[in-house]
Length: 148
Ligand SMILES: [Cu+2]
Image: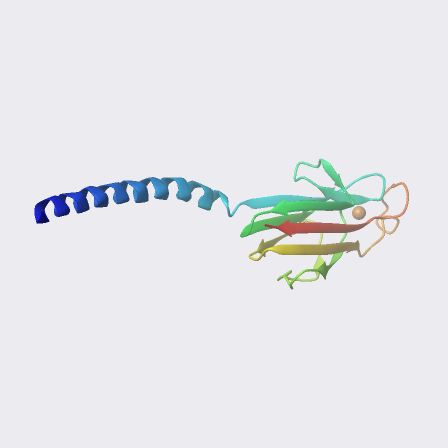
């Protein structure tokens, strides 16, 4: 009886170890992918001077909502040739670094908790002051980040 019980236990242990091994494989990959870096830029456009965009300059609009997973690093580069004042207008307080973002600089925000966060970016110099030919008033940008 003891021997049979022991064999059953060893068999159980082998199954458990197999499960743990497979679990490690399947849990391991999504865990690594759960902390991605999302890259955005403030890009120069004709109408409104600047909008959110991809790093390769595809425009995403003056107001944009993105959804990211917890742990995401959001890197934003200022590509419009003017400075921006960044204000958080919703969500638990984020570490934004300097509140004035200079042209050509990149800023990384880390989203550790679930929730909805909103940032506003307002240009410090106008397109007129910068000698940029644009159409319409300069945009004030709003970015909403939903963290799941
Ligand atoms: Cu601009």
